[in-house]
Image 1 (tube, rainbow, N blue to C red):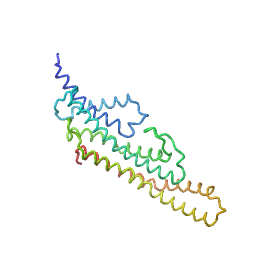
Image 2: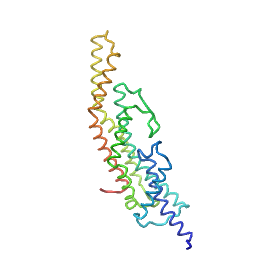
Image 3: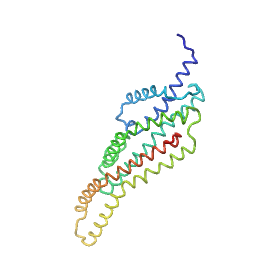
Image 4: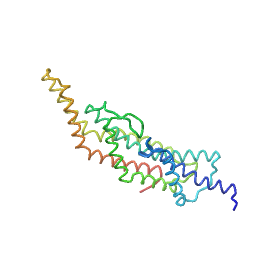
Length: 259
């Protein structure tokens, strides 16, 4: 059996373009893009998902890989995949921001450790919230939802030199402000309560200057901060879940997927 060069290039392109989009998504998606994930395993999962996705893809035009149009198409597929994972990264950054706000308010900002997913030093409380968020993300099948949306995007956003529009890019940039607004909303109950405690300590110090507020205030603030964390965890996780659902809406908008 003899195969022509045109047939081989057609098969290669039909496999290569989905591979770029799916592989770029795994590079940016939370949890799976961490430094603790072996690159060989990630590459194997990407190849396996791409292989099983091929029968589900619509008929597409053959684009030569080694051409100017192929270069533009490849960049488009990479950008689409990275954008989908980047939006979810913003959700996890919001809960890290909330943990930082609570840690600095209760005096635990100095207790930090290296985040294994990003390699950046963050407070321990942020790591605690991040572990809870990761468990919720995996329990709800958030990674499976994103993979399904990306596979569906081959029908709504076909492979070609024309991909995401400028308005889609600006919508992602505008939605990135949710890191601060959503993170502050998650941390606001604990921050406001600790602020009132610190104001009370200031009044006590003014009334009794001989009181060593540093030796008394820090343990009380620390204990109240831990207690507030325990009380506000359900609200924080509910806000995280709502933000996660909202992020899938943003991804669906630029992937042209309507649910």
